[in-house]
Length: 294
Image (cartoon, rainbow, N blue to C red; front, side, top):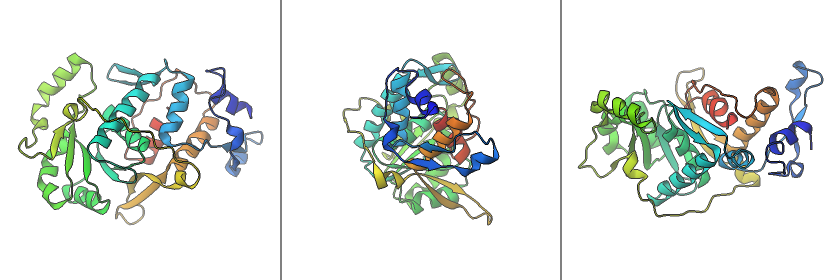
């Protein structure tokens, strides 16, 4: 096992969390242009995105995983929260391979949802929350999404198009959901008009109600081999034409990228902070600010 691999998987827990020797080395010739002595290859654990996060959590469970407006969550807690939220999605009918559209900014609810869907083998279709309603409708229908997680500010647009989709559940979350109590109260008061959604329409449900009293307990989906090349996240890019294109990314895509970044960012370690200012509906935002950090 290479030194950087030992540092990643053994230095914190003092025991191997995963045996990387089982996996072939992926060559990266680009490193020769950075440093002739740089690591020319790396091994990628045959696990899901959620599985990769669990490796970190097992190595340093008490370390801080994220901070949101002063509200903090450790690695041990983030795994528990993701497991619980994955049970909630399973309870409303989300299954392996199904696509859930995520119309959110960078909030804990959005990030936890992406990993929760990944834990049960579902796919997160991540869309810019400021997209126009016709564009949103296209993203929902083209992915055959039956479930949508959206910010409260998007509710007016969703109300206008929901009957033109196959959505059977719209989960509405506020940016203030995970804020400390005082800040959450202030946010709710100043943004009270954003939260209105049709209570008579049973398809709509608030986040707090969605995650309340979940009784289902679903086993973690453990993809290996070719299964890890299946799409787990869909992003969208205008590319050269301006017409949005669906970009299907796999567990192996994200985990390979993470291993590359860990080698490149050799001076970053447990306890350091990364400001996740880039959006999760962007490859850099989800890949570096979120997955690499975890």
